[in-house]
Each structure stands twice: as structure tokens, then as C-alpha cells.
Length: 337
Ligand SMILES: [Zn+2]
Image (cartoon, rainbow, N blue to C red; front, side):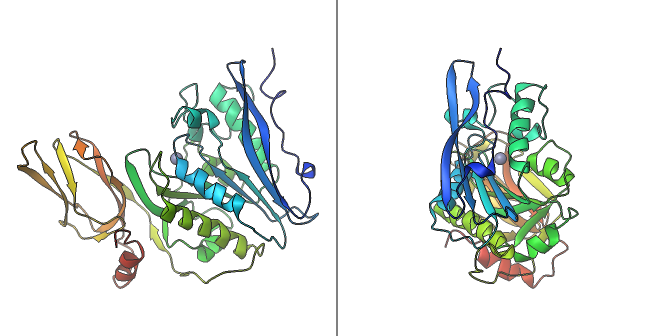
């Protein structure tokens, strides 16, 4: 029997020419021992010195296609690195991607399997394979995600502000909305944080879709981090003060019905503000959906057909932000205009 380790790719930076970008199709674990599986790996090494090395991962959830598009856009850009290395894995969970599914073939969520183990379940072995390859060289990690199919997330960063080096990075990034959380959940972010290295999760867009506005946010994010590490020239200065969100909550439907959304994505809302309606099949109003707290709408259900208990609006609590910042924040995320 061939072990996972023996027939899969081991990233060796010396296989890549210095001074230019290269994308290779490399061997991932096979499908059921029948079908070879290959996935792209991009490496751009500026010089002999590998550090600072930025690693971008996308599509850890196989249906989160906007991350692939961000990765593609970076790979196709004519970047000129003055130092360091950029590594991009545009389709990490290629098995889920081929089936339009979030999960791995063993129904595991890859982002609950890190750092993984070479003798664990398939999910755990695959997580170990990815983790060993990307942490061999990486100094700073950016993991690209989106909402699931039918859920749109406004561009936001998720990170643990307690991790070494994160605060300095956050000041320099292009996205002002930062959700601070220190999860113990088996995510790539947690496993990287445990190595005391910064890992920033980008959330933006909707599963199985590509939104080019979201793509721009993602590309700018990666470039702002590379500029901070002096790998590329800084294009523009970004707002240094970030809006830190310490708590998020899904507002759920109390009743079933057809959802008519009235809120902009990223809208700053007040407690009791009406953001949508549920109507019955004849159009009669069932209920108005009110916000239970002050906050910002981070995500919205894109489906109109709602069952009682369905998640409708993901609300980020803004309580600790000064009031005068809210207006600027609203304009920044007003996608609908
Ligand atoms: Zn995801």
C-alpha cells in the first residue's frame, strides 16, 4: 500500500528559479487510489534569501470560489518582488472543489483538522500534508474564505490580536473591519497561531460565486501585507485605525416566509432598526426583522425562502467604537451604490 506521504508533493523552494514567478501542477493525494489528483502551486522567490515569506491559501472549503479568483488574480499580476517569497495555493481542498462541496471526501471540514497528523483520518493526514508544506517556509499566512453558498460576507479580517506580530500587520492592511477571535477549533489560523506566526483570515463574498469587488479587496489585502514586509512598493496608505469587532451573532428568523431584505451589505444599524420583512405566499406581512443590538451587518442570507430558525443577518457588535467612526465605516462598505 502506498502511504499518503510517499506519493504526494513535498514543497522544495530550490525547485523554483530565483527572480521569477512559476506555477506548477503538483501531486495531491489520489482519489480512491484510482485517479491522480493535481493542484496548482505558485512560487515567486525574489532572491536567495527566502524570508520574508508570505503564504496565501484559498479554497480550504471547496465551494469558496472567490478565494480562488483572488489567488488567480495575484498569480496573473506582473508583480516585481524586491525581496522575500510569495507562495500561493489557489485550490487547497481540490476534492471539495471538484464536487462543489465545502468538505473533504471523508465528510470532514478541513478547517477543523489542522495541524493534522500523518497517522490520523484522511482529513487529518491531508491537513498535515498541507500544513507541513506551507509552514516549511512561511512567515506570514493569509487564508482566503467566503460565506457559504447563499450567504454573502462583506470583506473582513479575522485574526487573534494576541498572536505575535498581528497588531503591527493589522495597522498596515487595506481592510478596516477586523473581527478579533481566539478560537480553539482546529482551523489553519489556530494551528499557525500556535507556531507563534501571524495568520490572517480574509472573509468576503459568497460560496460558488465570484464577485470582482470582493476579488479587489482580497488582492489589495495581500498586496498591503507584502508592502508592509517591503516585498513590493506601498501603493497607498490605508486607514490605520481599524474597527475591532469582538463579538458576532447571527440574527435568525423567528418564523418562516419569503425574505425581503431592506439593508445594505455592511450597513451600520441601530438596535430596533428594521432591516427586512418576512411575507407569506400571498404577500401578506408576517413580521418585520429588527436588529437586536447596535452593530454592522457583516453577512446576509442571499436566499429569499426562509424556514424558522434560518440565519438571516450576521451582526458584528460595534459597542466599543467611537460613534463618529460609524459614518465613515458605513460609506466604506456601502456596496449597493
Ligand atoms: Zn471557509
